[in-house]
Image (tube, rainbow, N blue to C red):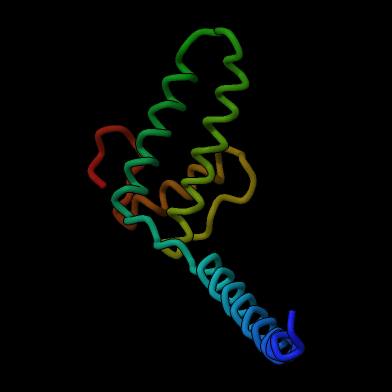
Length: 125
């Protein structure tokens, strides 16, 4: 390779490296910004529908006689119901149930009913 070619490489290599570094930083910032955008809130009608579906499933499991892994499934469905109930309470400005006891859940359900969201099956909401 001729000395002139080496000179051109020596001059252009730092410039190319600088552009690559700038592009990498900008790409990382865009990726971070895209990941940090909040997900859109679920419509309250869908949240109420999930609440009714999970409440019906809890009632069905509680009424059913013992079966394979019934207690584990019941605990999981109750936890899912409590999560959706807490989301609905947060959306409507109602204090969510503290702990998993039935009194707190009943209080939160009553507060949601006063806001027009009923978790019982077939109830308008």
